Image (cartoon, rainbow, N blue to C red; front, top):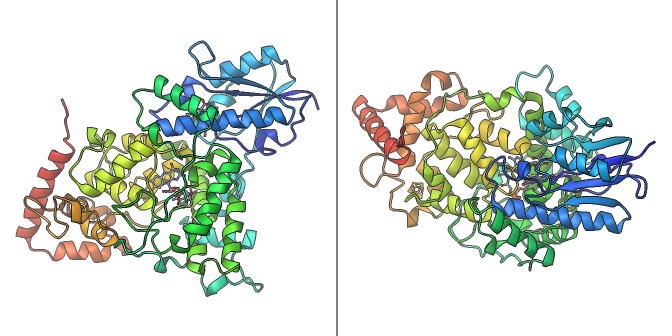
Amino acid sequence: MGTALICILGDQLTHGRGALKDAIPGRDSIVMAEVTAEACYVKHNRHKIALIFSAMRHFCRELRSMGFSVHYFEYSSRGPATLLEAAEAALLLSPADEVRCCEPGEHRLREEIAAWNLPVPVHIIPDDRFLCSEEEFQAWADGRKQLRMEYFYREMRRKYRILLEENGKPAGGSWNFDAQNRRGWRARESVPARPTLVPDCITAEVIELVNREFPDHPGNLDLFYLATTSQEANVHFDWFLQHCLGLFGTYQDALAEESPWLFHSLVSMYLNIGLLDPLDVCLKVERAWQDGRCGIAAAEGFIRQILGWREYVRGIYWCAMPEYARRNTLNAKRPMPEWFWDGDTDMRCLEVALRQTLDLGYAHHIQRLMVIGNFALLAGLDVEQVCSWYLAVYVDAFEWVELPNTLGMALYADDGMMASKPYAASGKYIQRQGNHCKKCRYSPTRVAGDGACPFNALYWYFLSRHEHRLKDNPRMSMVLGNWSKKADSEKTEILVWAKQELERLAPEWTP
Ligand code: FAD
Ligand code: DLZ
Ligand code: SF4
């Protein structure tokens, strides 16, 4: 083997994996670069940029301590602006026989790197940090009419023998304990305070840089709360195992005034950039259940998210790209309102979810799906704008995971490839799941007229708009039946009100 220049991207920070798999210190050199092209292709939340830059700098330090020569370009107007420029500059400093890069997690960057024209060949190495390869997923998907996550997940449980009895039956007698995981939040439990991390000097320097260089990006870095090394991320996960896992399942679908994260793990960002290993995390949760530290519903609920959903959405993304990004089944084109960028709305559930999203780069699943996503779906907001907003605002957002969740699951824009029905809900659902409505100027029990929760009329308007498309879906028959049973006068009143509210909340035309 000749010498290689190994290009490590900001979300590929795992030792011994991907392009680092056969790397040898002294023979191969490494390039890492903080570049405008990656930092600005959407207005990434400052927490995300700070996490990635700081984690990259820490990872570089670890590689150097292992004996690797690393060409590290810190963010600067005089430095390379793209990853290609960084690779070119590094090749001049360390000539090599080949450039090696692990396949990027976004289609746009895969295309870009595949087109790199360098003096030596560029070899793309498969990303072995996932539990299901793209080929394996494709083989599972081939010939299936519907790609339901539940069946994929069972295969994954079998493959890794997780939560499985000796006889191959699921532990606890069921594959899925979701029905036990839907309790609403009534503030009866106290949410454990998360340990705070004091930024070290690398992180402090990065925070200053990000505040200076990205002034118009969202994110309040005074609240920076993220681990930036694998070791810290593991400490963080162990804290979750000890303090939150027990109630994770119970309150997985809850919405709370008191806490942005309730009993959620906050590990997606670490998994997505390579600081935590997905199998390791699942095995630790299985062990916690085996040791009696949590119930089966909590363990299964958590493992399903990682072994099931996370791998499944990645499979969908690579199966369906690049056409997937252009899908818009419901023809949703209404401009996204400006208040998505500052959280300035009097709908309390949305205000809470948006403000924490913008300030911290974090919202849990139900906030993303049933509050923000639900509003975007019901209002018919432009699919492309909504997807690029989600890609920008969350710390854990990379297109392979963000796009299927947003376009497919939340917006139902892929004609049911991801979701068996639209995740459309009225204000009653949000009221049941949490305590925001008590602090809201709207009433979740009223449908039309001043003070009525806008989700209610928008919900019926959504159903009536898309009745023709949804009428053959058995999972929609009950709600569509409820709509059709309403008197014509009531229907008219609701629809007139819905259109008026929609124009007020998300004007079709903005000057
Ligand atoms: P927990 O609730 O503690 O769950 C544990 C882990 O399971 C997560 O860390 C994550 O790795 C995995 N997981 C759970 N649900 C999903 C899912 N649907 N898809 C993939 N992984 C899942 N997740 C991202 O990592 N990046 C995104 O950009 C992203 N965008 C989303 C957009 C929308 C509209 C929706 C509905 C969901 C999105 N998700 C995304 C999935 C999920 O909301 C986040 O993974 C989760 O909220 C992260 O918080 P947590 O680590 O506390 O998760
Ligand atoms: C997201 C991101 C950001 C903000 N900055 C960088 C960077 O400066 N250098 C880098 O190598 N990677 C960065 N990334 C991550 C890449 O955008 C990521 O590799 C692609 O989105 C593919 O998942
Ligand atoms: Fe949200 Fe409606 Fe409840 Fe207000 S009343 S918090 S808008 S669900």
